[in-house]
Length: 246
Image 1 (spheres, helix red, strand yellow):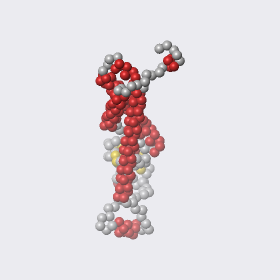
Image 2 (cartoon, helix red, strand yellow; image 1 turned 90 degrees about the vertical axis):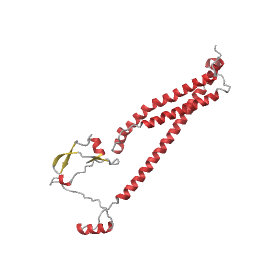
Image 3 (cartoon, helix red, strand yellow; image 1 turned 180 degrees about the horizontal axis):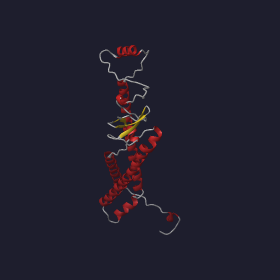
Image 4 (cartoon, one colour; image 1 turned 120 degrees about the horizontal axis):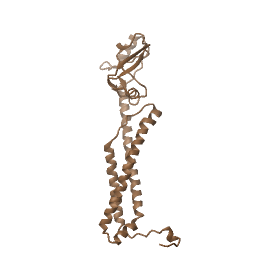
């Protein structure tokens, strides 16, 4: 079995052969499985000790022990006497697993909070931009009503334009976001940390962005519909300020 990073680096999967140098021998072994490594940058291989050649020298050994009723202290004392060593290095995998789970939960909660804050800020910026954009043209929309168009028709036209604006921005932003994600997981992350993440897409998140853009567009149209009922100042052109002809 090999870890994820080794599998990704050498493009290996279940059934492929991995080349290993064991002692002074080059050996090709089939991959039986790929196990998660939680971003560990070092390539790892798990294999049966019977496959090791006689020339392979063991530098480090570790055992996984479930203490049960006797307790870890009795097992440690017995192992020290059997192996004739003064002390053993112990690692409580249960505590480490609980600590890692807590860290991951906090990281995911913080990521969700940052994502929510980013969406709120982006929606607020889009709302303000669209409202200002259409507010500067309120006088022209009111002229349409002066020329005979009903208020309902003008409001419908504003709704269509607002939805086109926010929807178009969302459509243009999605490819840019996907490209930036690809650069992060396939270029920046390997250079900065030595390991990469699998590239994945989330259509449900795209649906959330589409719904948010729709809500912003409807909000802009509602604000502009109220603004159409108020008197607007005619825009002043540069030629009029200079005394030119209209």
